[in-house]
Length: 139
Image (cartoon, rainbow, N blue to C red):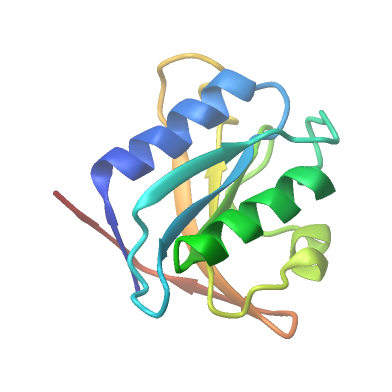
């Protein structure tokens, strides 16, 4: 189960709406070994695509060095889908390389860049196996 503050769900949704029609992506870091998502880090989709996301390799290297310096790890890796449901694509599954992370998808297919509803779902992806998990939103 992913336990996450509501403000972090809101931040992912806002980032997804802001980047629509392109996919948005980012990380929520937390203290090593805690499993607690705390620090919201929106990233740039280097692919600038409505159907694919890619972290810029230099930005990602900087982020991992920064997390190491702060004794953090990626607790949530998120991205948006702009025209499909919030479920990992084959490409998403093939690129999932953090077995301890929660992979959160935010679909803006209903609202686009507007204020309408978004679909938010969380998954574990380990060795190509996708398992949906519940999300508990806390204050």
